[in-house]
Image 1: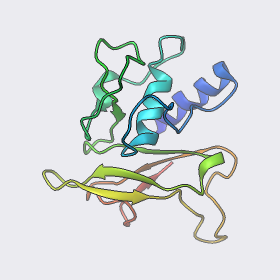
Image 2: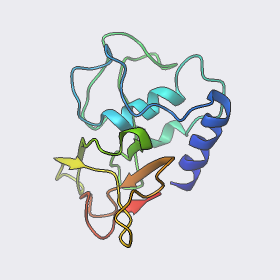
Image 3: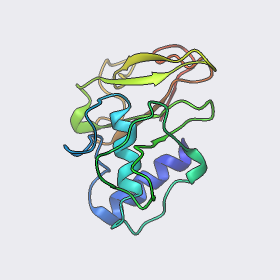
Length: 152
């Protein structure tokens, strides 16, 4: 998560903006895993010249694809960046903290659709990292919104 957060900051320094957390319109009819897929598209866009996450971190847990190729890859798969347990990492850019996203995640063999929202500070009730971005891993249990979530 720290390496991914660093890559996002490098992206911002190159592109003058954070990666988008929304898919471009023609990318997919599905909204599942959309913010994780949008993050992956940003890094693997053919025009992006900065450092990229390891391809070993990628998966396509919802098995969707785009009508046209949007990345440097030879397939049209819409990949997500996965955590160490094989679940997509939720990505929220601060402009869209009020939006929820649906992710397919869970413990091994027990995947389900889960609605994920950006994290709030337990003390103030305000957004965590209010002017930046959030990365949220469902943690070892694969369930978003539980005590083992990892928020960066």
